[in-house]
Amino acid sequence: MRVANFFCIAMASLFIVATCGQASGGKIDGKAEFDIHCSGCHPDGGNAINPAKTLQKMNREANGLKGARDIVRKMRKPGPGMKSFNRKELSDAKAKAIADYIIKTFK
Image (cartoon, rainbow, N blue to C red; front, side, top):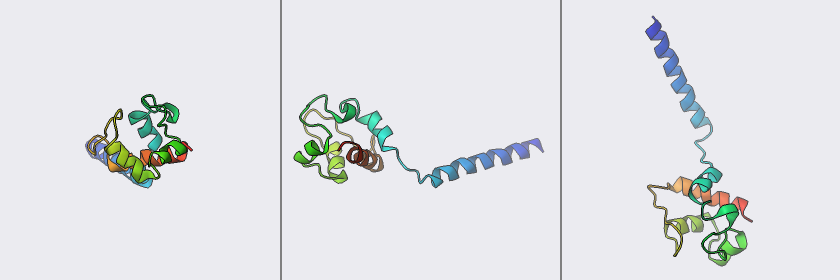
């Protein structure tokens, strides 16, 4: 009987964890992903390698990065001095979340 109760409790716990993840929509935290992948070279939206190419809107747009799609494209095929992020190490969803965070945060 105790094994059956344990099994039921374990299954209920798994169900709760699974439905909580779905309820939040599995939303990716763009800030957290930015902090992991980008903040080393772009602290506070700056640029430690090339100070003329910050993440501020004026600089992004001057360099042809007008929207999230442009930012993701730059992550995939950057110019000299920037690390490339392929889809295996940074999914499209995470890259888009980072791009949205950049646009929202660095005005």
